[in-house]
Image (tube, rainbow, N blue to C red; front, side, top):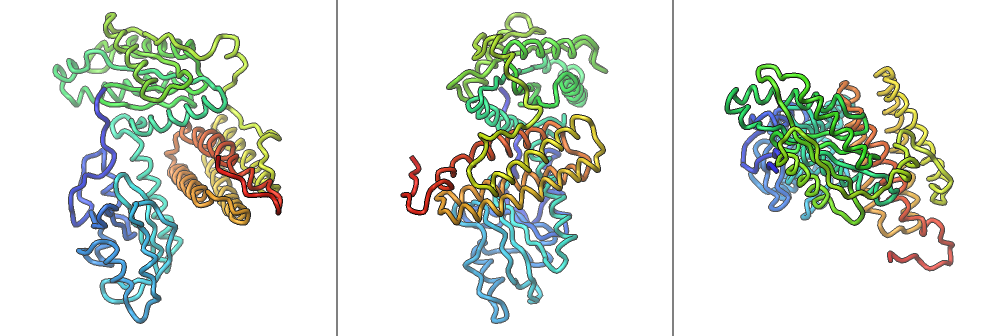
Amino acid sequence: MDSPVPDTYPETMSQGFSPLPDSLDCAAILERLPVALALIDPGNGQFIRSNEAFRQNFGHPAQPFPDWWKRVHASPRLPDTPDMCPPPPDGNARDDIESDMLSIDGSPRHLRTQARRHGHHLLLCFVDLTDNDSRQDLLRQALAEMEARSVTDPLTGLLTRRRLEEASLSEMHRFRRFGHPISIIIADIDHFKHINDTHGHPVGDQVLIEFALRLAGECRDLDVLGRYGGEEFVVLLPSTPLAGAITLAGKLRLAVCRQPFAGVGSVTASFGVAECVSKEDWNAWLTRADRALYAAKHAGRNRVEAAPESAFDERSIKHRNRLDRLTWEDGHCVGDPIIDAQHQNLFELANRLLNLVREAGPPAEIHTTIRALSDATRRHFRDEEAILSSVAYPRHEQHAKAHRVLSAKLDALSGQSAMGTLPTGKLIEFLAYDLVDHHALGADRDFIPWLRRGPRDPAPTDD
């Protein structure tokens, strides 16, 4: 398989966010944004890059970040805050920090500092709270666009290899917890090198774009389609056994070969199919699909081959439905009335949003519902963290970190919704899997023993 397209900044020193290839053009967004931003190497604390707004406010930092932080906070007029330095040695994100800092002209500024992971670096955002609302909107919009670009192939608009692997691991977790079948299809354009050599790379790029459109036209909203590298594409099929995946692969093959491609003529593709089986990791599953693809190539191309292993029979599949609705059941309760009531409310809001998406509801109503879900989610996270702290849940900090990750994803989805660029499949994936399966019905189950412990009961163990 081809190497993935890199989705992080190259580690080269630059005074600013310099122009980069199309696959990395989020750097240009950051350079123009009127919010002070900087990239830092968490290993040695050195500034890698900074944008124009940062340089106008703080100049060109020559010191490592911890030393710089102490310097901009060192003044009798400012509170003593050097120990609040956001990025710890391990490079993880920290909570937002409000503090007074000295700008390059010596004037004090009240700023919120945010440290978030971005690839192998830390992205630091300094938000001026004197104009909080407008700057927060700008920051949220930029981060939402960055999120979209970091997981999207710039040529085809499909998901990147990294995001495909993340989605696959998410589905594998669901498969192991709830027994829903999952399959993948690997599609590879036949003789693509010949197309590039004969017609040129610009024409080859147009073939890739059209190929992606034809695949997407046959897939369901719930399916996850991405470009894995070069001319190779992967389709992740939730709630789909081997037989269903083979059927879809046949439709994809016909969608490619039945009509000529502009400027090229006839184009065909080969397909390898594999269903995930128990105790199989991602690499093993992908390898079986890749071997099936190789078998299709070896047998003459323009055909579908499948790995024979399957975890389900025909009869059992009929009793397993696609997750088109999130169903609240009494067994989902964790035992705290506040948490359980809020979980049920989140289910209702998520279902309202799913219905709007399925029925192609008005974009404004979809966005309003996303904002309502976001507000309810934040209130729930705040209340749940207070409850977990009161019962001395030992993994309270890890759970709070998971909340911050989910909140950031929901903010990104809201930003994309506001701009009219929200992919339906990505929204469904977040609601059904990230928020519900993996968190409300996954991580939240871990603290049940602490909620149900009496005042004189011994503390539960982590065994």
